[in-house]
Length: 545
Ligand code: G6Q
Image 1 (cartoon, rainbow, N blue to C red):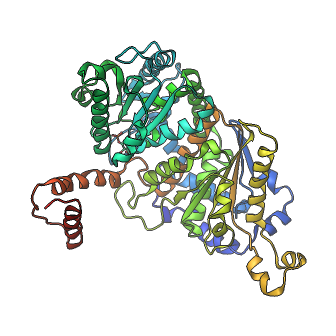
Image 2 (image 1 turned 180 degrees about the vertical axis):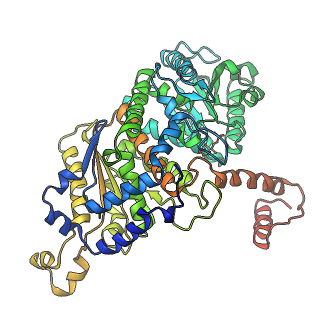
Image 3 (image 1 turned 60 degrees about the vertical axis):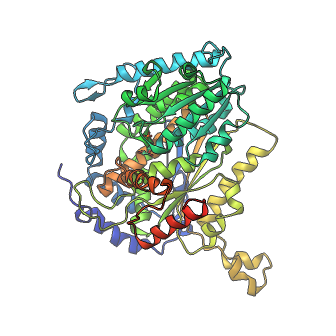
């Protein structure tokens, strides 16, 4: 199917026109007109319930958005991804994170070769290793069992593992410590190893390329710390360092035996890799069985995305709603608000997933886009956010669509805590949608001069995502839901959601300046006057010449 440029797809101008027609319609009116709306505009699949009724959409909006998906070739794009086509055009790569969670008996081809057996071979090796570490069979150099696991990685090799560890802490080994070092700021490393015994510490160096400046700097510092603590015996590294990478050559050069390397493949993007060997720390924390349950959750959502009709397809609906606000209401952000303390790192994880994927300004064939692409994703767990930035969401001048995420059953049921927590989810989405009218404010006895301050105009959209309980499987479903929503959005915008040239730029730039900061005498500087002056001032402040 030949996909037309975005503005030429018939649904696009139709949506522009339609938006003008319904812009003044309120959620109050929409709910009054249709008493069943709250049940009608909701979908349940793979154990995930999505209530999207509190969005500024009519049946016509949904019809047009679904048409846009068809006219954008979404069905063909989904098939192309699952088929292993090289849809990451600027890097000429397939995009097959879905293969990471395919069951053993599935077949997924990459360049005519079934990758599923390799995926499971790595998973089996990871499971064997995780079991040995967890049981104490894998011992450190001095014969002590491993009590501390430190993942060294950054970006996609860090955010997934940190988020998953925090999310699944309830299921984790409480007699072991899991820490994560990402920043090249030495403080990150120093604090991570503070108080730890090197003899009981295992480092997992996680880096797809094994050349990333921050990770390699931290890995070398880790080796120095370990050797200093274990009497300088080089042989000690073998029992205290393992690697997760696609680059066996660099792993060997660092001095890690490739027998202790867990591989993955260039068809796994960094931000789509928490379910690959990059999840080794997660697997050690929660055990292989829980890790596999997480993969099964991912897979269930993959199957849903691949097969469900778009009108009942959770990631498609969420992606289309994001496009609706981003491109037709000028909304610049989406707030993600998990009412689950264990998901405290989920918004940070999503920032990378969404913004690194869809923060693009050219189409897949290199033309400048003339519409907005990826919105800014941000958020904090509820109810904490309610006591800070929700003010702006309720009464500010910007439209901020929100995703509320909640679980019906608490992992730590304590008295009335969970009902109180959930009552806040429902109260917030209700207040955002329906606000508080002048009459209501007056009826509360508010003096006239105070009424405008206490008015809530409402009509502020939200999704509510309700799941049973936070488990490894539900975590997998939730992550896959957002992965595929991102894919849906990227397909509509015709961009490459799987490259990251902006990130690559940062990797190269710092390399040039490091020698200028470290030179013993003032180097010749050829940056702009601001950068030159800052470098000189820094050198002076730190006591260099
Ligand atoms: C993710 C990005 C980026 C990457 C890091 C770490 O999609 O490409 O965040 O994960 O830069 O890269 P390495 O794993 O190669 O060290």
